[in-house]
Length: 384
Image (tube, rainbow, N blue to C red; front, side, top):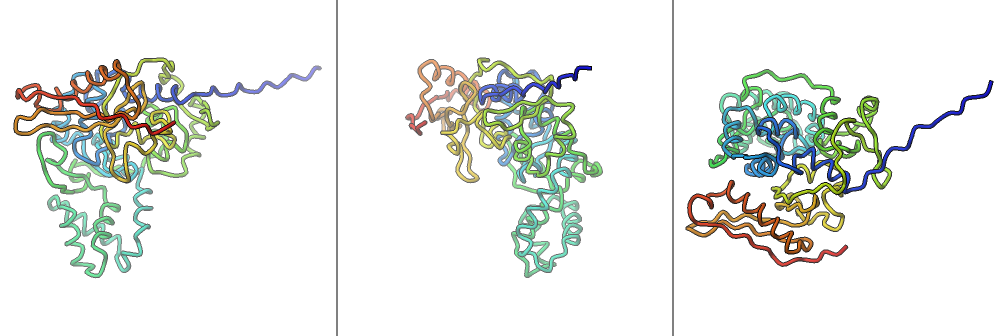
């Protein structure tokens, strides 16, 4: 009997940075604005980066049809969404359900953070610190300064900053309103997520469902991409476990990429309209390899250290920086765009149209008669 020839599986398709970018922009609701509610979008995107109070509003403006900042403000006040430290040890706006499940999932990152300054907490019993802090912040929301001062009464020789950071690491603390509510101001005051939501803590979930959600919002992506997004390690075995349910590809460097089989992967030439993204938008931070959105020559140009600038996407890639001056004393609200590459006359017209739409929603320029102004700063050549 003739021996049957073995057939090997076809090599995975190779996806260019442009193809990866179009796929991610589609998942991120940035190729066309979606007819979702704000809560649906926050759930789909697995949270919004929220180091500062205003960026979540600008993130939703770039992604949703007819977005009104009052919608997110109402979700904040009704406690349907909250501000809490989760991914990458940074503050995110999450739905209530995600706040209760994602925080336990990424606790290992908080534990790593705690180990970094453990030598500044010599003699501090972390279990006791957790109990004292929980009782204190659940009695009433407390500022970080108040938490430090309370813990110093127990451990007067400990490093004050380390004490308050330890409380943030060992407890799932949310920033209570009015902090984060559009049109209002408020200092940072903290309580536990369980107390704020009047719901018990959730057990630590398996990461499988979050991997699938990540791919749905950021895919196709590598193991390292998701680890960078979440601040977690050792996820390769999770991807391997899910491999039979996933499609696989390669990037141009040969890195294996995973995706949901039926997820949209638009053609490379799919139009990508201009979008104004605030500082720290997750589409710019959601991968270890960010070349699908940020051209290599612009790496690091949209931020310095922990300071990030607003980003202008043009043709699907970072092409400029922007700054908003809301205007005072009758002065017009102004958007200033710093081109990172020449946009050309037609490109400037398209960017101007998007800037006007931003100003009409996010400032009083359309109603108070002060008007608005769109300015383009001089192009700076950063080279190829």
